[in-house]
Image (tube, rainbow, N blue to C red):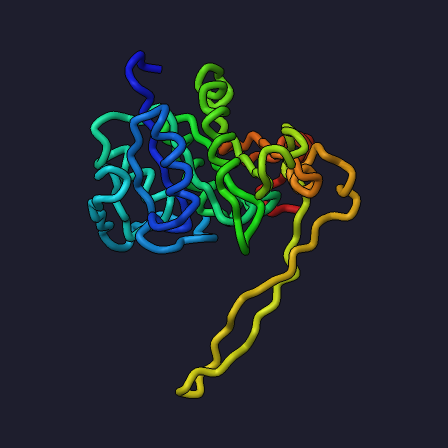
Length: 263
């Protein structure tokens, strides 16, 4: 890391106008020079989508001391565009968040916040994804302070060379948080259902909603992110790009695969 002041890139999926992003910026500006590049509207559950079928537009805004761009794309677009076009120097760290609501277990595959951080890793930049585990009335203050404390530890290690840290923080004052756990992804499923409605022209449309189903056998296993948050603990889960199932890889290598079509 350079000897000059730390350079951070902040993004999110709740839009550049989100309260969690503003709280994170207000705390981290004390330790870093910050550039904010975030979607111009909410892009929650955008996953790792990127825009290839139209040009992207970035509007320079006076927010965040004039170092902010609102992009009409996904969080991954924002990070790509920031690093390749909008920033004069590569950032030392990408921080995505603070997300309204947790990103646990399978959520990480859908999350625009996690994907923004993952794009940093793809570009060779250390990255954090930070979420607060509350939707209705989230308190971002301690999540922002914890991120500020975590950043120097991350940058002085090789942890994030090829791995992002997915951080989930209870929406509680510091005195009520029960500790920090290094976790693996838990099991979380959604009982998906669609509400079918009819528009004024008589055409049907479908509104996706779903109830969360956490695995019951993980209730007491604080090694998972789901259980740690359930016990009012901060969860830190290392995630990397390699989705290879190495157990299956070994099994496949042990098979005899005949590609000739002959029986």
